[in-house]
Image 1 (tube, rainbow over the protein chains, first blue to last red):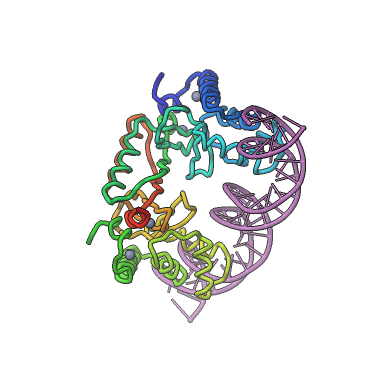
Image 2 (cartoon, rainbow over the protein chains, first blue to last red):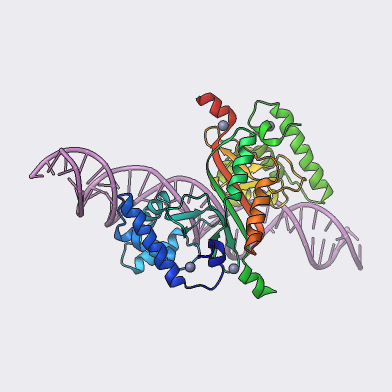
Length: 162
Length: 162
DNA sequence: AATGAATATGTTATAAAATAACAAGTCAAG
DNA sequence: CTTGACTTGTTATTTTATAACATATTCATT
Ligand SMILES: [Zn+2]
Ligand SMILES: [Zn+2]
Ligand SMILES: [Zn+2]
Ligand SMILES: [Zn+2]
């Protein structure tokens, strides 16, 4: 399979993309003895519908459409669970959430966020995180978590504008 | 002078550090024909009081103490001006703002945020931004802006805990 | 000095994002 | 069946950020 960002930013069989990722998520949840309850599963499905990040309240709207109560904790609790277990990433720059496209593979994602089509992809490789670790190490800073996010224009949207 | 992160995370003559940065900011403002009005100047001074990031409402509290009205736009407008002109950085991960310690020098900062003492420093070098540009370039993504932020423990706080 | 455009401030109100707190339900192990 | 951990339901509130519009100030030009 092509690397993540190339796939996300191109036309692809997203139905298959989504299905495979959801199956992978289910395997992980099963393997770790976690409970992918209805609201959690539906939340993940909602985020897998596209490669765009969704705000908690957009997720909540769609959960309401699926019969859940319109109360912020409903969405935040499901999202927090998914983030805690690596199935969803939080995009701080957008106050939003995006499904992880490679759940189970330990990774330190750097995000590429298209501000034209709103697609969010994980940048290939570990170079960005490695550079951050190196820069921190040089001054004796010990990193626990990082947010590596870039906003700009994806290949398809550059093409379209040109 | 020692590189930024080393200075920020160590005991240093912060009165001089603050004074020098404020002077530098004034030079930039003068050179670019901008107006460092009282509320903007005071906002910058507030952020220069320490190397910790402050939320907009913390800044507002201190502006109130200095005689300005307690209304969010007062703080947000001053902060937006300072951010737009490179005198202050926005730390997305904290929903907060920190004074830039090297105003005028074009840079693509990566932030090191100590979650023990709340100090925020700009990581040395351009390695992190370079890595992000390289990763994006590899998939044809064109970056406009980036947020590169790491949370962890600064040298002093590691020492203290050990 | 008077004019007018651009910039900056004052003010009210609201939107958007996130969490606190506590009660009630579910479920599997002992 | 009971205990204890986890999950959900629900109300309310807090925190962060912006919209919108009126007024005032600045500054270049007449
Ligand atoms: Zn896809
Ligand atoms: Zn795009
Ligand atoms: Zn200092
Ligand atoms: Zn520290």
